[in-house]
Length: 196
Length: 196
DNA sequence: GTCTATAATTCGATAGAC
DNA sequence: GTCTATCGAATTATAGAC
Image (spheres, each protein chain N blue to C red):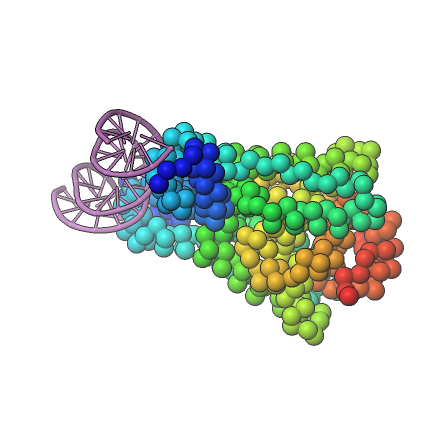
């Protein structure tokens, strides 16, 4: 069959994203990717140079979260959870990063930079202390990535089965507390204060 | 060098755990594991039969969490977080499971069964509804695994740097709310109720 | 642009000497 | 129990015909 260069590249990229997301870096062979795309394996090398560069192209991402500061202060947590879930279901990029980041240091480094640059500014809007903002962003990341892990990667049945609305209702307050919560509120609810 | 059979097996197993934990299944080659153990690669096959069975032996685990029902009801969350962190730092088994579970369905299935059988009973102690217990256990799993992911696997700087005490203080209340929280308490704190 | 053929590695696994 | 030698399969990557 005869295709345009751009069309082939696009087909390969789509197949690569699926394979990398499902199998990780090693088991997603260029042969399998090429077969999925209905294209000869040598074309993959021709267009992308190497498997490594194909991978880099397959997981380019711009999180592009909506600015949480534009939503009412009390709903920052819910808004963030909602935005992340949408982003996650939009394409396979984040799934690739999470799956391969667990075994490849360079991908883990990329995850770090993405989440730090995206979430730290949000947390920084609610505190003057830069180090505390990093902590809060880290905690929020842990819960958000944990949900993604259990829902989309490990597929824990109850987490996978929950509706998005239900998930936001449960997890939103957690993120809210991590990002903008204060010790006084916790104390009023009988929650152990986290400050010495 | 001349060793006993048991000593060699033990050396291989220790090296395998390290490699699997650091590199995942594919990149942890039996050659590399054997080299780490200072043993010939063929001995690995002799003792374990195949790489797959070596892996199975390397990630056998018994979570053996302390029964959270023996602690005061208000500290169930903190106790669980504390226990998980200790367990995680104890050996590399859970790290192997999490790292490889992201790309190997059979390992993911094992993660599911471990966390379901360990956490669902805890959640079930606080509700009569079996389906709700599964949900709560799933939510708790998401936060606990998310912390493990960010602290030990992806190594997000702020999460990695936090003291265990600080981490328990932040995350404990989250687990507490997931496992034994009620909507009324949330409402009193100005948190959006999660029930329709 | 597409494909065949193949080079160059690397891996898991086996056979057999000592 | 240990090691050398090697097989057979799979992988990335390249060269070159059409």
